[in-house]
Length: 473
Figure 1 (cartoon, rainbow, N blue to C red):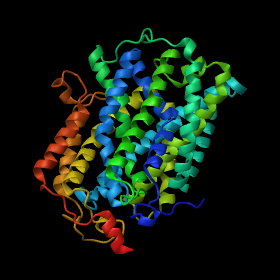
Figure 2 (figure 1 turned 45 degrees about the vertical axis):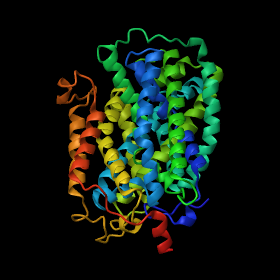
Figure 3 (figure 1 turned 90 degrees about the horizontal axis):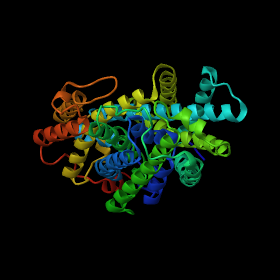
Figure 4 (figure 1 turned 180 degrees about the vertical axis):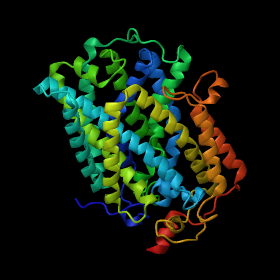
């Protein structure tokens, strides 16, 4: 299989051969991994029992999918990734906002996947063959996982799609077997001696809904276009693509997250997930657990790393996608070591997802408002101005930036950060919200409202993607 040569340039119509089933496969297969499973552990670590954990995860995921899934339709029309597509609203240079947001989201989730997957691998190998559990073992396992991830990401979309299709079947079987493996120790009650993280039920439940549920779909706000740019709007309707995106996100996120909740309660994992998960596993499930940790981590982290390569390619047009992928792989691996040796899982995960959700939500809302205003009509050639190191076009605005859109995002993100509540930082607006983290709501509403008020009713763009492609072929 040849290495994908496409970066963030416009995908020709002849190469847009994927369909809605491929979209479901990649969203399902890539998410059946420990990097997503561990989010189901968060509500349990916050002091919630089964039903409170399940309802918070489901509620947050449903809300997140409702906001995130329509973004898939943007790249369906532009034939490029979402960060580049956002240049229609932020300007061809202003779309760097989306590239940076996407890079940070993918970086964090890649590191998290390698971190959790590597810890479970070390733990299972320790039980199976007596592997020492010190820093050297973790370093070797992290490096091996990172290497496998790099190979998948560098080869690109086609290999990742094939891998996701295989994982969709294989990981579903492994998780189903895991339900049986941990059934004997399962309980619906909260883990003993684990008080509510925020002192009472509802603030803690809302925190779980955002940190564990909403954060899953939000992680895809810049990723969905990486896949739908390969889907042709001439053969597949927007409604079909939207439905496939909703299905892929809902099933792909809820199945692993609820498995994480189930196993966290069975393993009595309060302060840690990987260690108790391995310790509670029956001996016959250790090999399947090892396979799940290895294959699932490579599939999920590979997809995130692929997106990171695209975002860095968009930031540095002179870099090739493959070289950009190698650079971000090295940075992500460094974050894995930092996470393992310098932080605890709950604090790092909670702080990371809440902060980036506050930053990313207003960008997503502004992009969706812009897409609705222009009716899916774009000029794909004008979107590529920055990538070609040229100037001009209908999305040039003011020196390549749309000042009002950029300011709307910045103010929305600042308000969101001022209302966030994490173990490491609490925003000043919490005094006005009764201590409840409403950061994603505040950032989305403020950023979207400002953009709606400050900008014209219709975004620039008079050429749809298929028409423009036909004109340039």
